[in-house]
Length: 248
Image 1 (tube, rainbow, N blue to C red):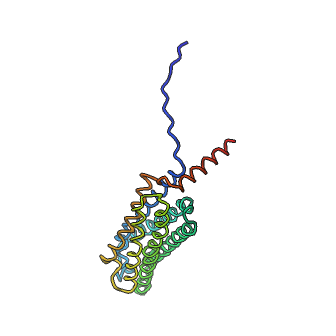
Image 2: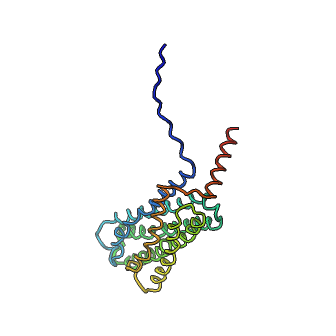
Image 3: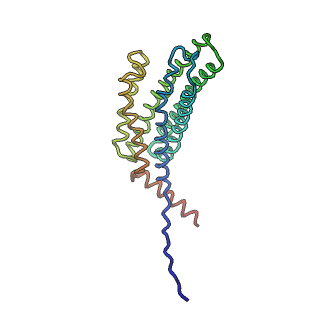
């Protein structure tokens, strides 16, 4: 009897849990950038007579959906990273989760205010609703300043310090976030005191470091994952012990 050896395809090694965590966190960070088009989508609502206008409401609704996605993805980044970064500093890690949730709550409330504006417009509120409409838009701008202006700076300080000390990623990345946080806070303070507008060049420049920090972190985690460190060594050892105990 002739035995025919058939070539076998090697089974790829399963992805370890740390790599999965880094990949998921990176993807979620990149998802938080899907709301960039809202700047254009929301531009009509700033017209004083938007509530009595005849243009489509669909762009505002789409912008709201994008912001909800961003809010959920933001919470996801904190929840996914917490089991790793808490080993460097549990209080700061919990603070990061808390501020991410608070940021998302602010986004939800802001979106609700604009959807209420759309509802009033569809219901034919007319000229009598102009003041209410302007108040809703003003409320959105105010809560945007807090939820998507101030809180991301706090996020950068909390997560940036954890990643910088733990060396889980290249140190240049969290350093960028740590440096960018005070710039963003100063920018928000200038808007609050009327020194410049929310869409001014000063504001745009001040937001660049934080935006680059979060985008670069997402790309880094997807491509490279976590760097070898005492934290990753302890987690790998813990996973190995768990796997060994499961086989006994």
